[in-house]
Structure formats: C-alpha cells, structure tokens
Image (cartoon, rainbow, N blue to C red; front, top):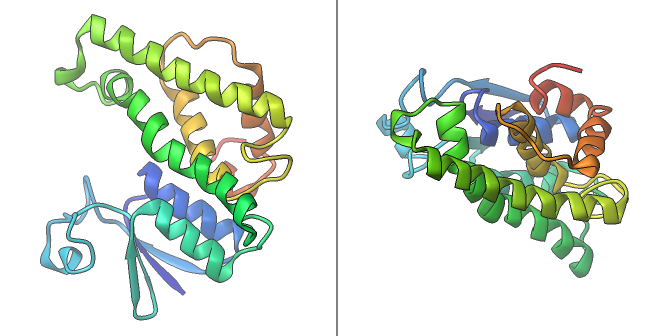
Length: 207
C-alpha cells in the first residue's frame, strides 16, 4: 500500500494517482497542501524539505518530486512497455517527461495564474497575450509530434510520458481563452479517454 500525501486537485498529485491506476498499485491518499494540512508542518518537512506535494511513502522509502515518483513506480511496479529499459527507448520517454516539466510548464504559468487562478498579480493584458502565445507555441510543438507518431507522445504506444503530457493537455483545454486549432492534440485528448486513470484523474472525472 502506497501512501500519497497531497491534495487531489494538484496536477502533480494527479500524475501519481494516474500512475497508480495504470500499474494497479493500491494506495491511500491524505490531503496536504493548499486548503488542507499545511506542508510547512514538521511532519511534512521531515519528508520533503521543499514543502511541496506530492510525497509518497512506500514502506520505509520516502520520495518527492512528481516525475521522479512516477518513474519510480513504473520501474518498481509497472509494465516495462510503458517505461522501457532499453536506453534509447527510455530516453525518448524521458525527453517528453522532462519537456513537460520545464518548457511546457513554464509556458503556461502566466496565463494559468491570470485566467484560472484569477491572480491580481497576473492581470497585465500585454503579459497575458504574450503568455497565451508562448503556451500556444509549445502546444504546436506537441501537435507536430503527435501528428508524426499518429498516436502518443513518444511513439505509437502509450507510455509513461503520456501521464504528465496528458495532464498538461487537460489544463490547456480547461483554461478559458481562444485556442488555436491543433487537431492532433485534440485527437490525442480523446484517445487518452479510453484509459480509466485519465478519465478519473486527468479529465476531472468526465468521459
């Protein structure tokens, strides 16, 4: 039984929940973070000094950082087809996981804080327009990749990379602004909906 610390609304916690569903891992989740138990409590800081969710506890093993967690779960409990051991195949999966965590995440920051979180510090119209354009540029990169593979982000089969990327695509469609037409991204979003873990944790429970 894996213990997961973090609120279910967090995109990074949802990565872990979806991964557990893919790998049939039993888990119990505890609400920590914004609106729940504060991550600044000593109990939490002892597990993650960054005071960020998620954290998992697998027996006496404690781990933080969401992409590291899903890699660990895939390696320990998962199907090798989803996170292959062969160096080049694994590198292709890791490439897109890391791209999501750095380039893509960075591109949506201002637009998400402005349009979804309604942050008063993110209401500059020029900065918002630039942020939306930057996000769209990165999503166009994803659209080109998906058009090339015809299926999933790292190839023709679902892989571990599709968990963080799929959650990012959900965030793209759920943020209210005029989206450019990206047909491969839209098809991908619908293709992921055949997976129980995505419907439950990646698409807000909506088929």
